[in-house]
Length: 159
Image (cartoon, rainbow, N blue to C red):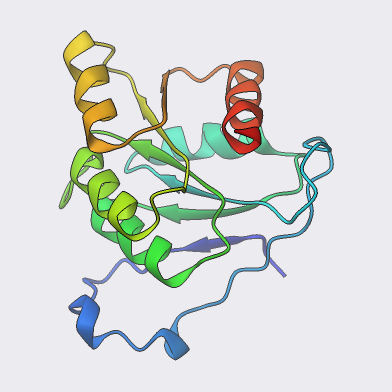
């Protein structure tokens, strides 16, 4: 069984037309290196760039977590809505269809306690402030440093 689910590439129907029974169910095995966490762990990577997604997966390899992927903000919102097992979102801010700022606002309306880490190559003060206003709990810049990423995940999950 693969530990990765990918949002469908075809346009999704209106949220009111989606039957949750037809959506795949993710399995989140317990973490190993994130040993201070006592429950299963699942991360949603919202990222439109395949290389960045691959680098995130590489950085999280060996952590025994399940990774769900969304290629735009709309898919991220849908996955969060239909997958309550998601424990944390890594949200790219610059994506097609719906950007990370708007997606974070919608996610936080549904699940205000779900940690969202804004991740982007653009490090302007304006983007950081806009991310905070949208509801992001933290901010990390690309290229991603593995130890910084894992430290940030620990910090947000423990709080």
